[in-house]
Image 1: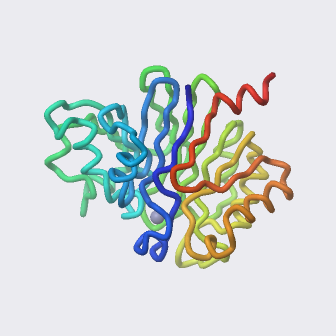
Image 2: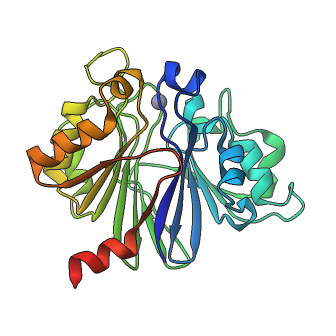
Length: 258
Ligand SMILES: [Zn+2]
């Protein structure tokens, strides 16, 4: 069984600091592998509320060091490793999460196997392949990922400003999770806006695209309405994530193939 459950769908300062949406990232179950991506503030609390078991995690992945993506990384490493008494699992992060002003505390590092993300890195954990296809354009080192599992390929595009090579790096994926923080562009902030997201989705044309990581502008404009507009415009099945939402990738596969 493969799917994703959202421990948060908020992004941007106003939404996260006021917890207008939760901000715990998302939990992937791909075949028998459990991976937590971008554990922002409240990830541990949401995982417990949703009755997920952090001790079953195989890996924690940070797309980048910003606090809405990394705040709970240390406590989740402890939760994954029985408070550090049972070292296990992987931590997969850009180098700047470990070096100057690190977000990963020194004392938790011996509890996990640490891998630094570089553009083009490919790793395999049991039968799941993870590729980091391109560097995003964001104020800190930021990488998305493509997961290959038995029911297909899932891409995640985290925070970035639009750039022409972005969609091509994710070609051929079946499912897409994409962070859409804003409605309008602001060059200082370096995020995708809704029109950028529509363009990227239209170029990649996955079976299903899931919008998440909403800032205040997007919440005010109704993420569900925006998803419908992109669906109508592109013909791709687009949905807006909500806190606690679960998407079953196997069910999607069966719908398409039978
Ligand atoms: Zn960011």
